[in-house]
Length: 131
Image (cartoon, rainbow, N blue to C red; front, side, top):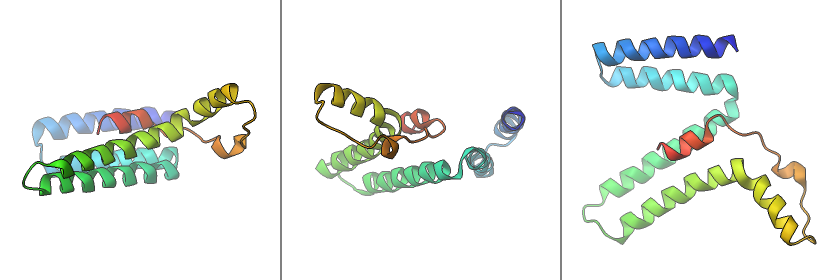
């Protein structure tokens, strides 16, 4: 608990100092490093999920902006990126809810509850919707 408060305090003031005094690429890297350290402190597994999701989004953006004419490929890449991000959100946040309600409608279904009992990653909704 103290680590979180200390982290938020230091990260906020570093952000203010770096952003308003001298905003450049170094500021972005310092904030990115602070965010990665915060995720690593919470759970290292979730840090890799967030990094892989961000790398996939970066790759898709490069594909979209690398195409000179705007055509059907851009829409495909955009749809693919949205589906990847929403699938992470659905799996981690809503899988148990969806399966429990599906079993209410089809009682003959059975599933292993331990397979879907996953821990919710830190701010998975924020990661999904803010990209």
